[in-house]
Image (cartoon, rainbow over all chains, first blue to last red; front, side):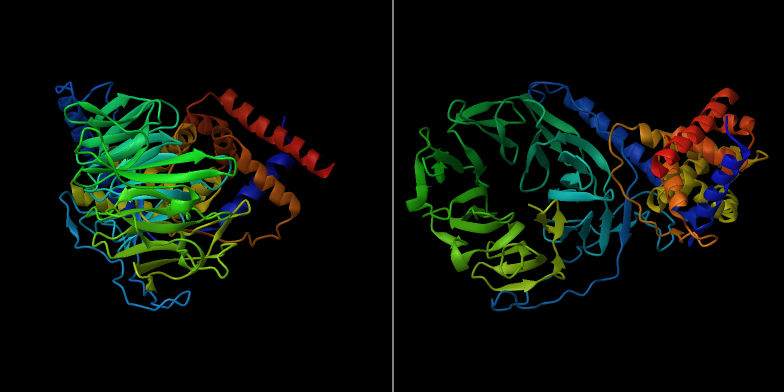
Length: 440
Length: 166
């Protein structure tokens, strides 16, 4: 039984809190625009599902399983910001250059009814939108940003990695900052809607044109290839890990007992490759291998480049152990033109890494190393011109503990300029996490 | 009703009632971000059926029902509600009518910890001042269930208050 006093106490409390709520805008335009957008999304998902059904008619494409329907789309919160002024300041004593700033690309043309959102309503009018590209996109805390557009993610989302797809969408790997939260992967539409869930605690790779995503959830032995719109293109049961995807060919990384595998996702044909393939050149003639050799002192990092055009896959370059690979370079990808391998040098004791670039032809280190050659940061990518890179940089002095973070564009010779304001790192249970994240 | 006429009619209703709806949403969700998202997503659904809703005598009851159902659906979803809607339309001021005591803070924390339907029952009964029958109609449950929800909510409140003060 409840007493009148208790009920009165409840009532007074609820009214007190409700009275503090004020509305500072107009909900109607946003609600109308949202309804129209929901209708368009349902139509788009229907179209995607229809394409998936047609794809079933090509059995080799669906080599080992069933298609996965896109998960229901959800509302997104997208808004536009006033153009931000970015500084161009010298850092860490490096000579300053004024590199090009991330900027919006030409607005994409979309069809469909016009949303009539008020200017400060975060429901996006979709008639004129910038499209994200690898050059323009970055994540700041729990938002994805490109040009003047901000895609808000769930509050507390920590972006671990992301990639920009050919249609302007994203592959997002993230977790929540609060509570116990596993790393989740998903494909987002250009407006930030989830169009496919790729599972938890897994890995992914994206083709250079952003049309295909190769992923594997940490919960099973199925590798899946998705199109940028979230539809499933092919899947395969395989214990190997995600290596790379180049054009329509996926590469799965296997250890010495399994070997790696080349898998043509359009025909389903496969070819055995050497173990430890982690990256493949854009023309598919070279593969980078990376492995460790256990020693009494510690694991030694090794890497090599093999020629995929010859049946024996001969190594053209190999660097192994403390003598040949003292900074423990570990490749992750080829550069756009295939000239370089990009990856990281191991840095003991930091929650950050040192960016690294080596030349494919002779294995020479072009960027990074030890001592004053350390380029400390968290995420980065080499630009398509192969002469500059953009990095979410650790700008702390000294570098450890990491306390400061900014976005920089740097030349391979080390001349850097700030692209965004320097921010304090985020403290996550005693470990410093970056505020900015760059696409792969 | 034509598109323009529907839009004008709906917009007039929303402007007249949005503060009340925002307050209701805030009590249901407990934070302004979720409250804004709840109001907007619910109103989007209401707009889809506005031709029908606008003809009924009490649209507020229907809108509240949509909001309660939407909120309960969010809570039941296995997947995370990933998007974030910044609270640019809703501002929450500090309760100014009376000084906030530790007791009030504990009480408010307790309200926020209630399960969605239990919280909805409490808000409808004690904030919206609806009868048990009206509350049951909106929640889609029996009057007995409403009694049970509100009684349990206050009982658990009493228990938690004792724990705090002991």
